[in-house]
Length: 138
Ligand code: HEC
Image (cartoon, rainbow, N blue to C red; front, side, top):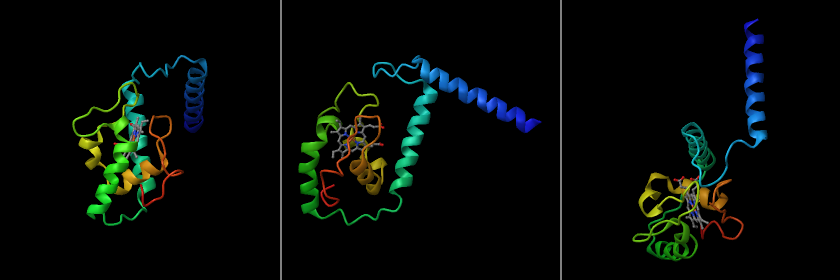
């Protein structure tokens, strides 16, 4: 009996969420922040997804100065317009906003950054570069 009740409750909750989504009442405007609960859920899902999908990637040595120089040029061309650079702010108007990578990039493992750059992030302004760049370039 308890299982039936739990099942009924689940169906009611799922139905309610579906109706709410279908009603159009949830405001997807970039100008309106998510509620705290939705924000937390989406951020957690993003972080866990990046962690999970990048876990098998092995990182080549990244301290070769010629790689650093090449990476600098690529970053300047393709990333700084959104993410800013030391001395410039990230672009405004995005929700979620592009993080200032000059300050935050160290919070991700290199393999996580690589995975994000290769695949992009759904329903954000973060594009994928895997279809236009080789793994070495990224
Ligand atoms: C058109 C704007 C745009 C461009 C160009 C862009 N990004 Fe992003 N990027 C974003 C946005 C917006 C997010 C935030 C996504 C989120 O919070 O879920 C993001 C997120 C990221 C993240 C994840 C950060 C984190 O803490 O989870 C990384 C890493 C990243 N970008 C790297 C890059 C690199 C490297 C480039 C250039 C090769 C680049 N991005 C180009 C808009 C952009």
